[in-house]
Picture 1 (tube, protein in one colour):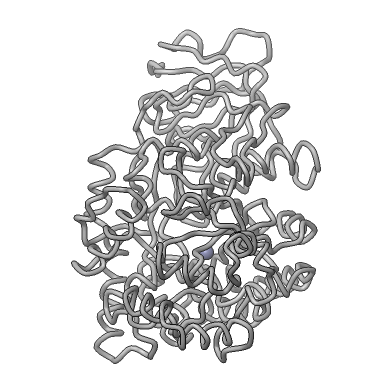
Picture 2 (cartoon, rainbow, N blue to C red):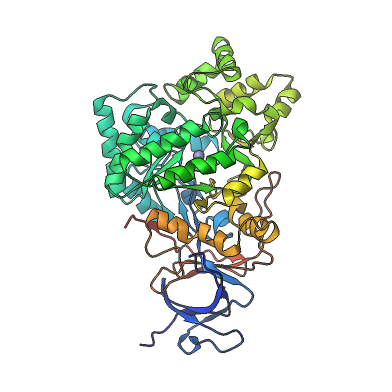
Length: 537
Ligand SMILES: [Zn+2]
């Protein structure tokens, strides 16, 4: 049968996402699917040319499956910025959102109102009018989005919905409610359960609670994604906890943004051995990583968990009360049982304000701001959070380049940006990983430093995350698969976003196709919004 092809991509070097080296093939699309993959000879007429309505010349380019961002925080930005330029311009065609224990659903009336207030403080008007993941997905699709979105259900989000910001174990009724909320989200099509055990309220939970909830996701075919309790001093206990959840709940584990940070710098060798041992023992542990030595998180993550108790208003009161400030400061300088004060070892000069309603603070470090005000850095942090916004974000320099490279070189590590699809319009000085994660991996770490081969790097961005999620029709170049494709020049692809100037698009990514629709053409966003919310198969 010689089906008509809506588009034929000719002359490119195909890297198909399995990890095998490139080969010449022409690719024919029909609607939103790959309808033909035909071995081709360079300089010869395409075997598919007679059937093509349109032809895309890919000579000199690599043709890869569209990249899957295995770790994204675009939960709300896909609604605020549905063209998702920062990601799509790198070749990302799917984002796995709802990470680190925070998901866009479920919401209660109270948490939806809180989210709207937090957004308003940042000058963004978004009606949080959904409650379930299904309703969220319907809103995203009704509005239109330029890339695909795969969801998870967040532990912190269900815990707040069931019991607020309470620093205690859940009652039997509260745990049952949390289980029900996880089950509902799974039934709405999310791919697993995420935790942020370093953050409140995840840090209020014990491992038994996490296992009980993870099990609900496991029974429905979900995976466990975890931002661990510690990535520094308590790194190895935290890996052991993640492995225990995988073993006891009987499910795949993904360690989020794997790193050996702060006091654990230089420990990547032992970290890799620990994970390999867990894998050898039969637990499916994998990880994602972004290719930078700085992390990014909320400024409030510097505060001990008890400060967060009772929710945002209670926290503000504590931050503004002089006697309580003294207690917070003492804890940040010392140790609190059960809290890994990873930032205790990072100087305030390494903590950069990345986004804040007071834009004059953006791009400056806490020490610098404190000095300019003639205040000490602790009071500067408390003033910023208490008087300006609890939603203030930071970029923190806390890793060693050698560890980053060692982790990247592992077969069980995939690529994830840990970033949302920010935009210059949405403002701030976000971590450059939003605009750079995928292209930096291909430019700096493949072409320049040769930490990875090109086909290894592409596998970490495509076939591997698809396999982890259980996606059976994306992530590879195969006949019958969805036509999500990234075409780039391997000789020039590079990031240009920096800490000082993060809102900069990459070079070398020529065309990006999402569900058959040309979404980036000649390096420009076409405005196409052919993305979908993916459901667990
Ligand atoms: Zn995280």
